[in-house]
Image (tube, rainbow, N blue to C red; front, side, top):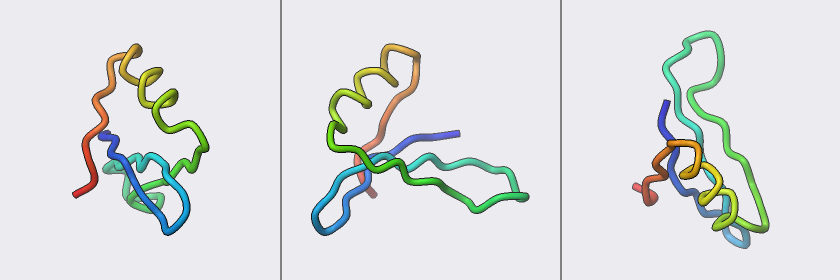
Length: 52
């Protein structure tokens, strides 16, 4: 699984990508505090990539 930053027109979020063929290829978690969520994920060992 990987995590990358995601941007909408007026919002920011995190996109969780995975390889499970039983579900859609990614899930976007929209948040008003993307830096706090990104810091929490980093504290738990996840790296958040910049948008592609």
